[in-house]
Amino acid sequence: MLIDGVFSGGGLKDFALVGAYQVLEEKGFRFQRVAGTSAGAILACFIAAGYTAKEMEKLLDDTNFKTLIDPRKTMLPLPFMKWFFLYFRMGLYQGKALENWFLEKLALKGVYTFGDLPPGTLKLVASDLTNGRMLILPDDLVHYGIAADTFSIARALRMSCGIPFFFEPVKLKVGSGENIVVDGGVLSNFPLWIFDDSQGKRERPVLGLKITRGSQKWKKHKIDNGLELFEALFSTMQNAHDEKYISRKYEKDIVFIPVTDASATQFDLSDEMKTELMERGRKSTIQFLKTWHAPVDQKIYQWMSSK
Image (cartoon, rainbow, N blue to C red):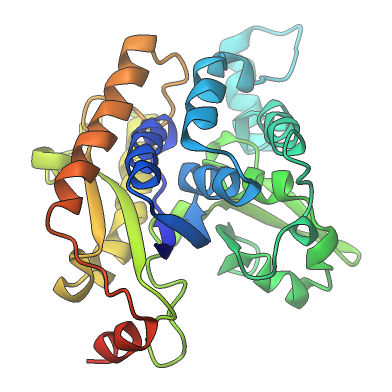
């Protein structure tokens, strides 16, 4: 069955999304269009590029994620330089290793730019801080005078995954200036609305995969220093907008995957934790599909979504 998919951000917790995708693939679901924010954008790109769930699992198992965080080399004491880079570079890590990893893995499927994919099949969310606006890639590139067909998907992914202050922001060159672009989760961590038309209708069923905080959804943040303050601030921004949008009308089309014991920036996940996260994604999706009945006729679906 053809459906559209939207995937939430969650950093390394998004191993759970791969487990969910495995179940959907096994049950015969195929994604016509995909969209995502941050780590959810990675899943969307890999699906659009043609990776199977098994290929994704092997790819992630074979990757040492600690090699994807790349601090700048310096001769000065590290504690001091961390604050230096936060102030002048606006991030602890460069993000180049992460972008190169995206480029390498997508190249294995012959995918480099948005022009290598059918039009409209992939949408990624980033945040343009310079202009104070959400950036939908590749759609919004036209407003910057940039050709979407030749724009690197690896670079777009780097934008969508640019956790503020953790990775240096991407500087998108526009004319003689540049715009500062960071993680899409700042403005929409779960863009379930992205395939709605101007009347709020959908061309086909849209299935969302969302990482949640489970039973600890309203757990208080521990804030004793500046970094913990930022983490609490970013977490609040990530969820406030999207949780307000998700109404009972759309809850039935979302697989909620509870993850409370892993951090979005935990790049040293053990093999056991990776397996556990994928299993949570699988279990949540199996349970969801027991009650989910997506309309098989697209005209019927459009009529129902207008009600």
